[in-house]
Image 1 (cartoon, rainbow, N blue to C red):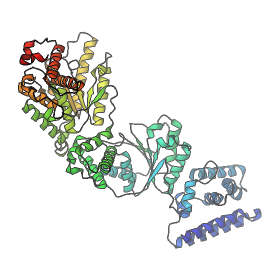
Image 2: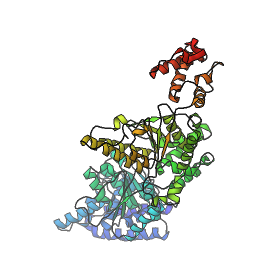
Image 3: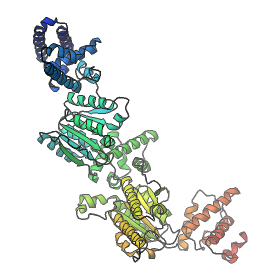
Image 4: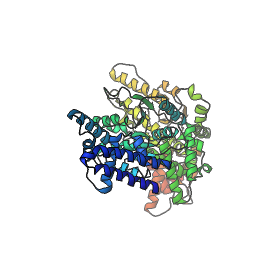
Length: 639
């Protein structure tokens, strides 16, 4: 703007006159400078427009000494001069003072200048120079920090933001808010919303990027805090836990922040105590842990993301079921919606499977060696168990998707403090479909299934098993995964009478497992071949128990036909009624089908009765039974 450019010219000309004055006329020149300065200020104020210089003078509360020092530093930058601003001001104003007064005044000026606008080389801070020269229009964001201006958008945590707002408005003291919660849970969103309600700009500092920056750490923090003061805003330090053991850096931030912002925020992914010994007693510390969102809040975020990206996924899947099944953080929902949007661009459409896969990619479960992912493409049609039991499991899965209505909307959670999760115990002989059923449930729910490695979880050291189980359940809840304890007889066996420390430890492990399962909010599936060995106390803590019997002839025929499917080239003379006479489990039939297919593929022929019966013979021998020729009746000649 023309008036602002004229203002800068007048200000710089005025400071030049002061600097070029003769030594014996200094007092007269200073008075002239002040008089001209007031005149220039009144002239720019007539226009009633924003003036970055005057705004800065007010925000930084410059006295005449600091103001002249500041203008000298601007002049140095504009005209590539090398005038020491502090020494020059001291020479002009403090030369007639006593040595002690000269030192004190010069020292105070130096502290003020370095705090507000000078860098360590006595040059004006680049961002402040850009701010005044662009009349406040310069982009002040950088790799290490981001600037956010007030917004009216309301999505989540409005109540929490209002609570923080009220504290900020009422308190007359500096407040340090320490906000902790898991990654992506909405800590920054809460701080941004609080700043917006206060009508304040907010600068969020990324501590991790500051630590890995080529710039000096303290220089970055100083620059940020000056920007906070420039914008009359607020500051938030993200990832403060990264310097909890770097005392000097932490102390620098804590001591500096109070001078630039009345309210400062420190956010961490873990619980942390930042209070230092003998620190400023006028600081009010408020610890504010962030709780998980409820289903209604999660649903609201999903709806907002889908609307913004024009994703019509509600035609494919019930959003309320997604919100109830996947307990995601706001950050994870944002990432999942971005992945779904990318799939829409690449494929031109979205499927239910794409939605589930996109959501699962955001979770990134990390069980280490304690559990392993199981993938299956099986469907309910592949599961051959009593129809009544199958239908009941299907209904349970449907109910699990809407359990949030019961616990949150109907407020049942206030009366039931634990046992909100879902646990299954599948019992039956090997190969009857217990593990397959677990995989189908996972597919139906859109969740990943992890099989716990009991050989790694159960430890001979007292207390170690409990620790491993705790980590397992914690990760399952965090990643929205289903836990599968396969063949759990060893871990869940009946408690013994206490004869020694080993017995006592084993009983404690079982008791801990029972308690942890009851408090688990997710889905847990256990299988056993010997239900009679399971501790009776265990049953009341299990939601559902199903017995998987050996398949009868009719079921075996269905299993044979399902496993072969439509794509395997079969000889037209395959006698499914005959091969269904062999009393085999589904698991054994699967092994036989694989073996028969490999035999046929080796000879580049269709799968025929000889391939199948030779594989049946081997499977029976493997199980300890030596078949007779009579067992194969009219087909014995094929062996």
